[in-house]
Length: 209
Image (cartoon, rainbow, N blue to C red; front, side, top):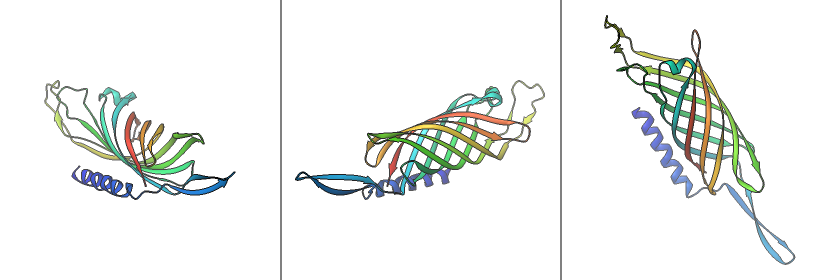
């Protein structure tokens, strides 16, 4: 977790430093009927960093053991043209156990994937759809089930599995280089005998440079 905090801080500072130098558009001038007009055109690739926070909702089998709780994340993106981009996400999710006295269950996510933007010439805000693939690491400290008369110790869990996700979101324009990002995703992790799924909702500030 210390590494994650340091990495997040460095990325945020890097984005803020570059924000003052950012140029996601180029300007040209044209003259028509004796008047001069300034035309802005977006330049690519556009890089972005977005710290996020939100909630996690365990569903199906996972909801039998855990309750909804919170999440934090950091996304790094590269938009290659007006409609297509790619992103990488590092996420941390924590869920309260449904068993009284049991420790919190945690997921660490590291995924990458494409993102497709739906845009309009007259609207600066954009909707998007995305999909990702990568690794999900689940961990939970060992504990003793208070309802178990034998006081058997439940061993610590720490395993990494492959997973996929898909979702939709919106990038709400605030300034030329800053947007409010809102999105929801469906996550599925593949385990040896079944799949584990949860839904996330998050928001964050996206810095472009």
